[in-house]
Structures are given as C-alpha cells and as structure tokens.
Length: 129
Length: 482
Image (tube, rainbow over all chains, first blue to last red; front, side):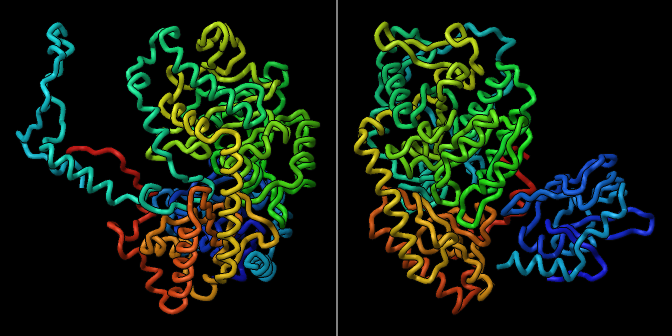
C-alpha cells in the first residue's frame, strides 16, 4: 500500500491532486481499492454538475461491496474519466494514475483543509484497527 | 452443459400416455407460427439424466448445512409441501369465483390472522411476491400516508449503515433520498446521531431488529420515539424475525409497518428454489394503505377485497392473491408449530447461534462484537487471520465447500472487515454444529500451514473458483443459438 506525498487525501479515502489549470483531479487511495477488492463498476458524476464538499457524487462497485464516492471540495465537475467505464480494473492496478473526475473548486481555500499524506496514513492505521 | 447442447435433430420425446385433449383446430392461420419453436431435441432418458446430474451438483439445505447469515436457510418440512400440493389447491383456477374457493381463502385468512398475531400488526396483506416487494410495499405505504396528510415535504428515509442493501434501494424506488445512520461500538444504532438526523424532512426509518450485526437493538423504544416525535414512521425489515418469533413483536416495539419473508422465518423454499412471498403488515395508521387483495369475511363467507373496499390502497403488486403455493406452505408450517412451537423456533435458533459462537471463539476465532450475545446469527472477523496468513474470508468460505459445508455470508455487513455472518437456524443438531466448528478449525490450521491450499480452494466442487469480476461485468443469463 502506498500513499504518495504529493497528493492530498480525505477521510473517506479519496485522493486529490492539484492540476496546473486550477482544477483538481480526484481518485481513490490504494488502501481504498485494496479494501474494496476487484472493482467491477464505476459511476462518475456528470460533467457540469455542481457539488458541495462531502456530497455523495458517485459509486464504486466491487465483487464484495458498493461504496459511495464523496466530493472532496465544492465546485463544478469539469471532466470524468470515461475510460474507467470499460476498464474499472485500472483503479485496482494503478489507483494514483486512474483519476476518476476533475472539479473546478469554487473555494480553493477548501484544499488546505484536506489531509496530507502523513495525516491520511494515520487515518488508515486507525481504520485497520 | 445446457440441455440445448444435448440436442440432436429429430430426437423426439413423445408423450407416453395418450392425451385426451383434442388438437385445437380453430386457431386462425395468422396466429400460427411459421416455424416450430427452437426447443432442444432430447430423449426422455437424456432429460432425466441431465437434470438429475445438475441437481447433484447443488449445495442445498436438503443436502448440506447452509449457515448463510441473514438468510435463515432452514429445513422445509415435507408436510408443508405435501399439503400445499393437494389437488384441491393445485387445480383451483386463480380466477375462480370466491364462493368456490372458500377452503383456500380460509387458509389465507387464517395466515393473515396468524401473521398479525405474531408481528403485533393491525392488518396484513399477503400480496407481495418477495421480500424486496414487501419492503417496497411498506415504504410505498409510508409515502401514501404522508401524501394523504398533505405532508409532502418529507423527502428522506433513514437507514442504519448496517442495513441490507435492499433498504436504501427501496427508499430510492419510492422516490426518497437516503440518509445513513452510523452504528456505535456495540453494534447499536448511534442514538445521538439519529437525533441529529431526524427532522421535518424525515419520512421514516427502516430497521432490522435484531440487526444485521446479529444483535438486538437495546434502545429500540427510544429509537421509535425519536422518529415518531419527528413525524416519521417506522418500518421493520423482517429478515431476522426468526430470532424473536413469538417472543417479542415488532408492533409492540413501535413499528408501523413490517414485511415478513415467509421463505426465511416460515420455512418455504428459498431463493432460486422459490418463488418467495413477502407479506406486509401495517399498524392502525398504515392499514388503509395496504396492497390488495386482502382476504376478509370469516362470518359472511371469505372473499378477496378490492379497490372498493380499500380506496386508499397503494394498489396491486401481484396477479390474483400472490404466490398462493408459497403462502399455503407457510400456513401449514405455522399450523404445525402452533404458538408454543414458534417460541421453540426462536429458543433453538438463538441457542444454536450462541452455542456455535461460543465454540468458534474457543476454537480461536474472533467475534466482531465479543461483548454482545448473539441473536439468531453472529459475525466473526477473520482480519487477524488475514493479517497473519494472507488468507481472506472469501478463501475460507471457498475452502469450507471442500469440507462439505455451504459458506456463510461473507463481506456483509460491510462495516466489519473480513467478516463471516453465520446463522445456523433451529433445525440443525449439535452434531452438525460441532462438525462445522471442526471444519472451520481445520481451515484455519491449513491457512497457517499451507495458505496456498486455502487460497486456491475449492478443490472438490464441480466448478472451481469462479471469475467473479467477469460474472459481475458480463452478465449473461439467456441462452441464444449462435
């Protein structure tokens, strides 16, 4: 299990990456994909949808569970990774390359409230117990 | 192997007894098919061997212990089957007038009465054809009730995070949003969180008690009060009724609606062996909204009520009176048991579960809620085994098949990692339970000594490990000639 230092994280196991164009990419952590097991379906939010931080905005289904995806920050969905529809296994194979959707944050300050890698590792350790 | 693959052109299989029905000759030409239907052509012996061999590959309650938690897989007494197959029931046309079916309707009426008594509800409809449909009926009634009171702002159903997946699905099907209520460390609904979640937007709460975590909600009366005080209604998911049968009644706990899985608690054939039946019960406030038909009229002659009798009904969910054959089996089962027998069902279902839990803990397994007594089922977590050996709950479940036991429910409820949800039911003997403990103990020893043996299980079943990813993604249920 890896937790790259250059990313931000949520307590609900999403990772968040700042892109150079001011948007952020969102995916799920390696720990999340490991807990879910083989992922079989992904339902991303629609492009253009406005989301509020913490809002349910997608679904990931694996052979053993269905899990909700939460918006890490408020803003507008500007892109969704359609490749995952046909190849959801990418979330298992390379979780930090397989971004799920991009948000244009309405309040970039919210990004500072996300967890850094060390804090997220603590969340995972607690979760493991 | 499909029966179609056995087909050989021209291998016909004529009826052995001459039929006495004349060939129909007056069907207009335009309604006749141009080509015969594509049916498999096989001899009678081919057909008998094919289906007998398929049945021999089954794990079923008739052949194996089937401790599938949250599913109450108990023995189906043969008497129920035999009596439901009486020709007077079988040959009755479902559209026949009520006055020629008084015996049949009397059975359904008495079944309604017994279910009312055992659930503490004011009225029962037998119409829903499965548990999920019963759930749908229950929440549709809640919606109809709020609508009838002009209370249209209620937009949310509360569901504990340990609930069956059907609960949120039902709420959404009925047009509601879903809000999850967390569970506290003892496996109870988190009451402070529930208090924060209720309000003018609350339509109701869906709850299973004993819960899917296998424990009884200690604060059920407080939970009911919180929801009722906010103007919401309480829906009881009957999945775990077996644990409290004739001991505690959902109506007395404050529930306004309930569905009952006859194929679980009342021992009718289950799942793919169904069809099921999910009668729905209602307290006084929801009774006018029950689905149709309902059997009435013990004194003036039994009849099926329709929209004229119950104008506020949510409507019909099934043709005729529902899955009549299933309803009759449950009726016979309840008559065979009587009130005393039903209490014994709950006694032995809980005794068996607690015995099995205690023996498995002695054998070195971890209970998910060690401080709690089991209801009719309990959860083990194999997290420690996985951390130590890499062997998962799914691997253990597969290996149990090799030992002659159906796997318990795995990875449900989702909040317990690497979990097995085990429900022995009242119909298993101590010897069977002991054999199951021995098998699980063997699997745990194998996981430590030769983990690959467990990870590559099953080894002795007709099919080995299935490709679950492909099965989920490429659902293919229909045979097509290519």
